Length: 161
Figure 1 (cartoon, rainbow, N blue to C red):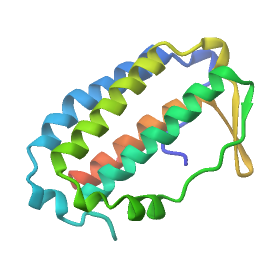
Figure 2 (figure 1 turned 180 degrees about the horizontal axis):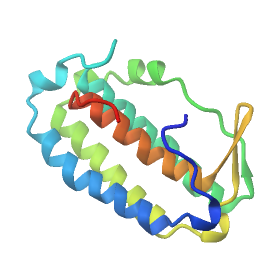
Figure 3 (figure 1 turned 120 degrees about the vertical axis):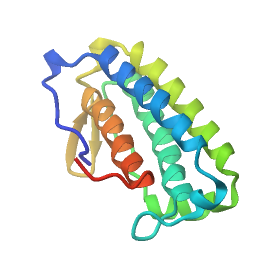
Figure 4 (figure 1 turned 90 degrees about the vertical axis):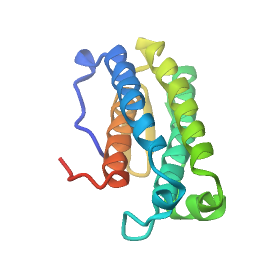
């Protein structure tokens, strides 16, 4: 963290974030499907293949779903972060079909867009205490979308912004 600047809470609009996530899904899902299994096995970071990067984004979706829901149900949250390399390693994403990974990533994010669209605005300032830093629900949502964009640039080997 962070992958996105923090918008002042009074200016944050969850509908904009949900629309941005849906825009990413609409543009990136067909592009992901155009890649072959061989393309998906290609290493695109210092140590991860495209399959592993997408697997990492699946992990991120699952972890963030917990945060997005729990922070609407309680005033603060203390959940650990997660070890990305370990999560990718033990889930063996390289052994999964590329199309199955795309379907799972897409379905999880469609649901997250729905959750974001309907987020309780009164909960946007609630805090996830991550290590020594407090993050608001609004920021976690924004940062999640920035995180996806960062890794999509890796998958498609696009320059960083």
